[in-house]
Length: 335
Image (cartoon, rainbow, N blue to C red; front, side, top):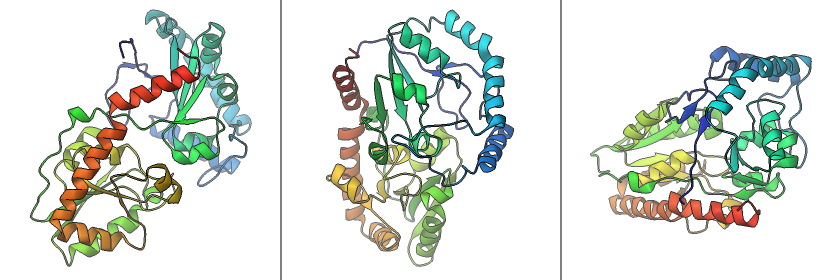
């Protein structure tokens, strides 16, 4: 769109996504012991597992003295590093600031508050668990100019939040020839419970015994490797229920761009939202029969592959998504 943008990350991605400006701050959850400590605190306060904070939207609250002390200590520890990084890289000089997950460098949101006092515009992009399980940081709820999500269910629990399709440069991803003698059915997961992975795996293994089909399982695999593996497959299965959020995520978007016939569970509200989508809608009752049809009927498989690719280009290509984003900017008086 002709504007200058930078992307700042607090710590390196565990899945080797490309970085722009990476701060590598201490005491963030890229370390196993930090993740374990965070889960321990959640269990202590009774907020682990399927816990959902109350409110419209749900608001995050400190889980007691231990959690409060941790964030205060971390904020003090990183203070000089953050301000030096902001100063050295001219990060006070932008007009619009997108906060992924609605989180500041500091848990007390001091950078966001300063930017807001300088007349800057604040945009938050929320993923499912940011609102469902953690809750929204109160300062961001009160001060943000625009809130976005790609999770349809968040529209029901966050007032005024807007939906934005996940952006992908589909021109950089070319569909391959997906006609293996033994049809490869891919499934990628980081959270087996959320995806219904155990049921998906069991179903595909059952098909392996009677059909020319093969399970290709990717679990906690780096992104580039995951894309490479999927490119050799014929069918992709995303998720089978709504345990970790509704519908589908970026892995499905990428699979469709690669030309894989893509299966996921879409509930009634999602089907109303995207009625002419390119998915094969599966659930616990029909997953086996739908996969069997895809394996045995090459014409049907090819049809769904092409439909999926066309739909993902129409709805998710970055050129189209950016127009929607700038439309929201205008509606929110950001530009």
